[in-house]
Image 1: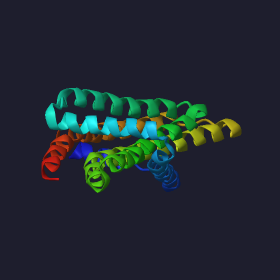
Image 2: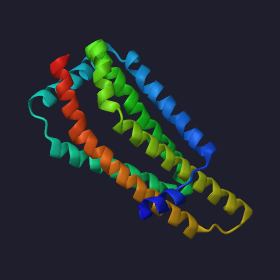
Image 3: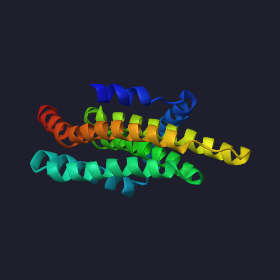
Length: 206
């Protein structure tokens, strides 16, 4: 508990940068949701086929361990990539693109399930997305908001020729990473084991 309290006390975010990140997320989700509308018939069929195969794999033989490995690798890689880019201020726009892409995928997945299974797809998509992917995108939003603030502070210091206390930022970064990795690990376990299990149960009912 002391470690958790220390982490929470040291992790504080600037509201205006968090708001900007949330706007990017909402824009990404909306864009991903409507993107499927502009796809041609053949592309839509490919999307439907992919979703159907995914659902069938859950019904028949879902490899939970492989999914966990891939999920952890993907989530950890995203966190570390954003963190590294955060210290290279000139690459900061890449973090905004990563955040947009992650939100876009959520929106696209939502529409893909609905396209494939209509109202039934809405229920399946909610189970597929909530709460783990929502928590993940919120964590990424907070991390990106921190990297934006760091990058802008570094740019200002260069313009004004002032030194930046990088140790202060590094220590805060460390606390953020520890907390986020803990949460990401939990959401990855949920995504790999719990969400597919719930999907399997729901599929038997509906």
